[in-house]
Image (cartoon, rainbow, N blue to C red; front, side, top):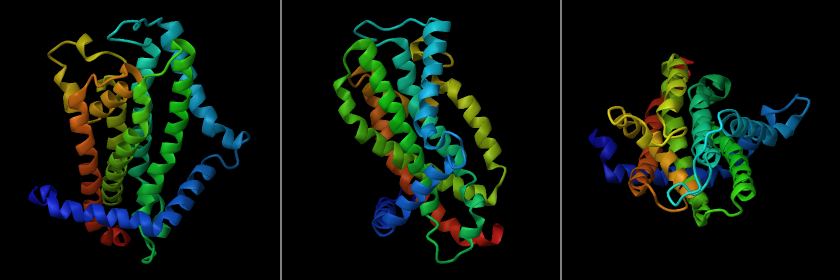
Length: 278
């Protein structure tokens, strides 16, 4: 525990990661581009799915909650936009984080032939998987921006904070991916535990409902879920248009940096034995 909280060690790990990006930036870019292109290779519609998949998911959520369930909220000072915008502002970062977590638990195992090459910088494998998911998030956010303009005829000024927020989300996802990828190499059941967690976690996030609408007795569960703070930050930027949850920012931003550094340090310690367990 002391090692995890040691400031000088964490700063050094962060510097090493920045150096990795500088030295291996081209390799990370090429692997990320290849992962995105291979995802749709051989399909009839090809790269269309890079936009089509987020577009269809967005339309499905709009149809279900806007027309089938006819969920109504918004139009007030406290809830400036409609319910669909509220739901999408939370579900978009969650879908991307969910994808990164699911892929990270098998990223080392699935690349066993590369991992066994001693000269290959293994750190780039979790990083390129995360960066590939960010492309999907950008498409989602553009669609949400279009929807907000079409329905409300304005966008909150807080949209200017999106690059800043995406950066910290990326740091958190890379840290989690470092941690899950190395643990997954040793404990292959991890992917199943992750899938179970992802199935449950969606319902204990403030995405489909306001925290005030659930019983006070179970409300602490929201605060125990670290991803709730990310969702609240995105809702502030994409929906509320102000810092409605300032304490969420005070948890999510430093927590993202900690996850980034801590995940890298664990990965660095365990990677030396990857070749023996694959």
